[in-house]
Length: 155
Ligand code: FAD
Image (cartoon, rainbow, N blue to C red; front, side, top):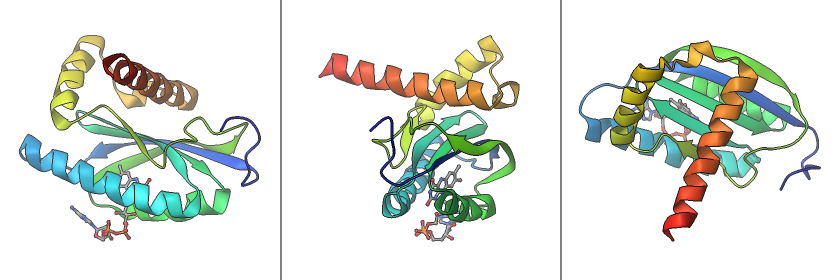
């Protein structure tokens, strides 16, 4: 659903944060799963779409939808003790939704993948703080497209 949005003006919020999740990989995986289940349930209800990336030590998230709905979702996200040091890079009107099919897409895979990405990250020096809003938004889009392509290639 690209182009004109049936819900009216679309806003986009882009932020990154530091994860406060620690412990065994399984426990972290379970916590990420809980976050995704709640996100998908709540976001679908209010027409918010987006993508969440979990990389070693960091979250990055794009939320898109009506301004008031994003504000109310983000109020809860900000209070969540499972992450800290939130940095909002953008909250502005957007020409269209980039993640229209996703109440919350997840890129970065499991905690095991995150360790793998973390390894790559170390090699490439990746840190969300190095990205501006458009760069982070583009990264999440590219990772999702790549994940969708590799899923399509497997099926
Ligand atoms: P439930 O998920 O049923 O949880 C009940 C309460 O317990 C909530 O107050 C919740 O904050 C708290 N809670 C649950 N598990 C834990 C835990 N392990 N540690 C501490 N507190 C806990 N929510 C969305 O709706 N949309 C999003 O897009 C979204 N993105 C998120 C991204 C990140 C990086 C994080 C960390 C959280 C995100 N959340 C998102 C979750 C959000 O912060 C709230 O937890 C959630 O919206 C509450 O949903 P609920 O009222 O259905 O409660």
